[in-house]
Length: 177
Image 1 (cartoon, helix red, strand yellow):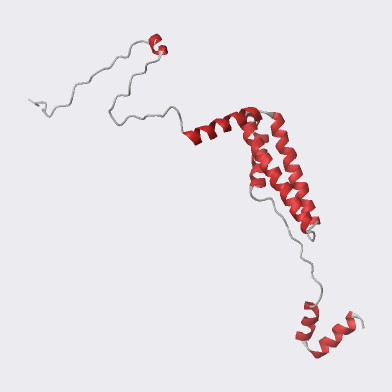
Image 2 (cartoon, rainbow, N blue to C red):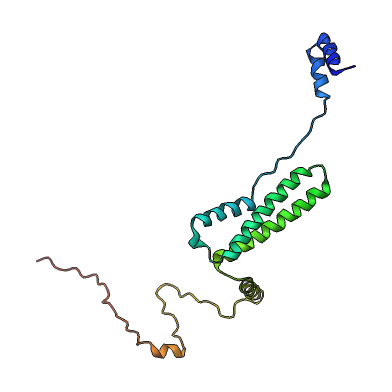
């Protein structure tokens, strides 16, 4: 029996029966991915740096972020195509995450003008300081306290510091006559 005859049979029975026939039809669910989170931030900042090129300190890393954004777009599309494959979903998700991480690091590098070696050194120093604490604590004097004098050789080249003492305020009023 064809679908048309089946539908006509249900129509004669009633509206609800016809809707049951349509409800039993096969439906497809297609997931839609969007540029959200880190990818959106990377894309917006990339286009901002295209408009303001003085922000970019390293062009190679800048175009590396462009490549990462293009690859993320490719993996989003591939993820849409492989929506029935759990392995494809996992692979595309891992690749998108790694590309987002790489794009974020490259963004920090090209805006800061750092190389990867300099970034590694700075992160190593920060981790060491975090573990053992800073060797040189910074002491901020309280209000009206004089800081300790420095014992550096560099201070000898500077001119001597002159402190001007202002007269203290008194409660005496100035006579008006």
